[in-house]
Length: 462
Image 1 (cartoon, rainbow, N blue to C red):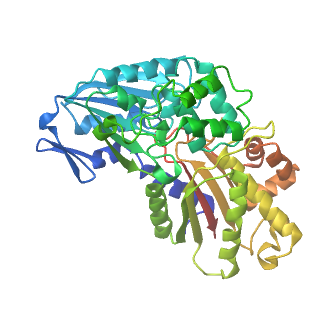
Image 2 (cartoon, rainbow, N blue to C red):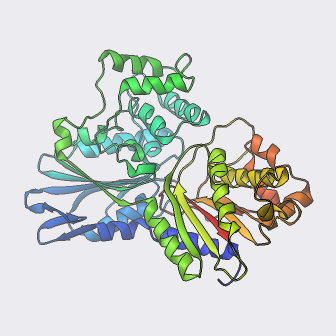
Image 3 (cartoon, rainbow, N blue to C red):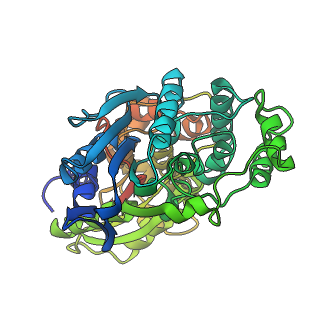
């Protein structure tokens, strides 16, 4: 290994993100030739297709649109791209709409209506190609009657603040929406082909962007249960409880179900996922001389609790590590949540790293176990006399409401924090990881990457 552990981590991160560039994934996953479209070995006869309409939406909309435009050159009738502000350019022939992320705004309503109109404008002999990536649930917004945009956004923010995971969040959002939970596919009259870039644990197409082009297995009853568990049922935003109760009574229709005839016209493929990025990072780590392994590809749960689960893996790797042994790279992926209890600023990745530092210090000070590994931690920040690094970042380049993709921590950060008198535990309690790393060093900034396959974590030992 040449350079520092931080140099290695940044190189692994760059290679991982490059492996899930959306334009390349679409070009490799979607093929056109001999009058057929082929996706992952499955062929679709184009002879009966009168026209192809395309809708690309999400954080990776630009790259996915460019990939499709290249493959389907000359076959597109209508093409729409919906992306966050600052996303990459649209290909020739595409209409571009910008909308808000992570919370919808008035532009999201315009985009939601445009998406439904595009789908409804297709005919029985047409193909609607949906290029879907994370962030799409905020960019396309079409609330059911009785629920306005503010109520939907407030519900989502309240659920996230209470630690709801992506499945819980989307179950509620789908049942307040006309576009999510298969609503977009239901509006189309012809075939629907979904190409998805997964940003959820388990790569469930029902959850990615809240599944606008796919059938949905969740119910109004489940949505009501989530609101009760998260303390929102008794005092929700206006119209939310009334809408869910109307669904429970059967006064308004459920989301699209698998046994609905519409579902028979839907084909769905995952063309990129977290595991793709992790495998690329592992190959790069091995090329740099690390002994690398992947711990998980679909981790979830509270960020600070997950950090406490990961620290023992770091310590265990050091127990038998001798001078001259190859450096170690433990790699993981998934997406954590944060229950906001404080008034600070941060994101799930920054909170994960700060929680790992706090847990290491706790273990070092109690001294009950792993004394040899942790003996110098409080004084020098080193583990077993070695340099080490923990990094966690979002592949989209955004971590919560901050300008950082995530953070990293190691001896250098710990020593600077001690010099400045920063209290790591107090910062963690206040959910103030961003300001901690801003002062101590350790913020990892990439800017928006144009892709989105959840988060990646590295635990490195020199």
